[in-house]
Amino acid sequence: MSNPLSSHTRDPRLAIVILFCGALSGINIAKLAPTITTLAVVFDLSLAQIGVLASIFTIIMVVAGSIIGGFVQGVGAKRVLLAALLVACIGKHSQSL
Image (cartoon, rainbow, N blue to C red; front, side, top):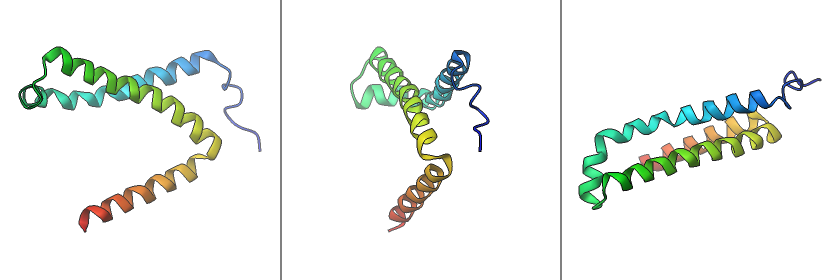
């Protein structure tokens, strides 16, 4: 069975689009905005320090997404999704204990 994406695997434009989408997925960091003042008070941080922490989190998400994407391609999406579902179920069960 041939890989339907084989003609695109060496296309640098696809890599740029994927990295851009990974960066956009970091938009959920916007959930941090309502808690900034509380974080500043509780942990005695400046707004600049909180901004650096938010940036580091986003960079880690982009890099990890790229690495995990290669892992998923090698192992197979179905196996990874089933493993993630199993871990999520175990985590949810452990919370109920």
